[in-house]
Image (tube, rainbow, N blue to C red; front, top):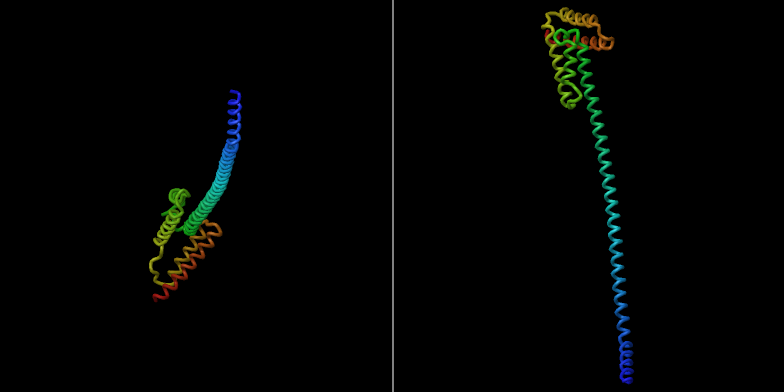
Length: 204
């Protein structure tokens, strides 16, 4: 029995010697697979981090571009509003200047109060500049219409024609206009007188 135990022990010992390299190889292969897996996981984690960093950069660039676009649009809108404001003021100024030059001739038909009401009602800044400019042209045409109603009938002589414009100059001087408006009005009367005189002479 002792010999058998010794034989078994020896056989077991030999088996262990044979199996030890196999166990070591398994452990080495397992360790290699683990290292390979860990390396792949680390590489994947790095790839994901790089992708996330790139995405953050792209998001930041897109946000900056959108902010720049908003600022540009805001500046363009501000510039457009300022331009519209200037054009509206210019339109109202032209109408007011035209009216001031001829108020003494048309104030009975179109008093200053009506002009003010027209400005407030039809040339308000809340309207689009296109509407303001169109209505400004309509107002100028209306003022000219009042002036056309007061044009002289066809003169029978140069003396009659001159007398008509002399009366316009006298009326302008008595109308209480400011110096600048009076000067502009007199220039306008002189120009129209010269043109009327040339037309009269051409018809003779």
